[in-house]
Image (cartoon, rainbow over all chains, first blue to last red; front, top):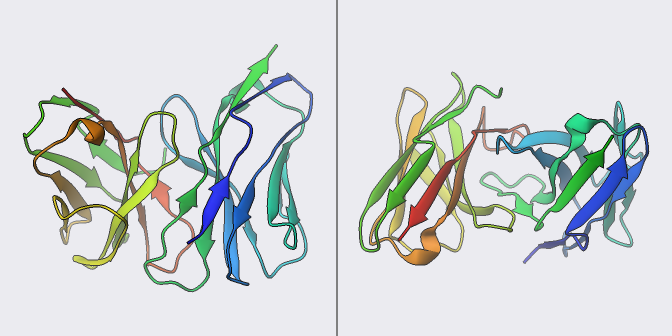
Length: 116
Length: 113
C-alpha cells in the first residue's frame, strides 16, 4: 500500500519570504502522480500543483514549484513570495497511474501560517 | 469556487442514527469520489461512483453506501452511526475516472454524539 508522510505539522513564514513544505511517500510503483492541495478555512480542497513521476522536470505554477526526487521518494513544495492568502493546510497526495478508480492517498497535512 | 456543492454544511446526529449527505457535481462530471477527513488528518477515500455504479472502495464497512444520479448529484449514506464517524466528508467530481483534475466540494461537517 502507498503511504504519504508529511513530517511538518506546522510551518511559519513571513510575507514575501520563501517556505518549503516537505513530503515523502512510499510506493512500489514506477509511474504515478503526485499532488499538492491547499485547504483554506473554507475547507474546499484546491489543487496547487501536480507532478507526473515519469517527467524529470520539476513542475512550476507561478509562485509554487516542487522539488521531485524520485529515487529518494521526496516531493517538496516551495512557495516563493508568500502572501497572506497562502495561509492554509497543505496536503501532499499520491495517485497511481492509469488506475480507473484510483484514489488519492493523502498525507496528514502541514498548516502554513503567514505573518505580515 | 469549484462548482461542486455539498449539503448540509453541518450536521449533528446521535450514535445509531442514519445520515444522508449530498453532493452536486458540475455538469458532465460522471465520476464522483467521497472522502472522510477526521480532525487533524488527511482525507481518506471511501468510494467512487462512475456512471451511477460503484467502481472502487476504500477500507470502509458496508454501512457506508452511496448513490449517484443521472443529474450529476450523489449521496453518501451512513447507517448505524458511531462516534468515530465524526468528520468532514468531502466529495470530489471529475469528467472521467482517469482524469487527474478533480474538483472538491466544501464538505459536510458531521458530528456524532
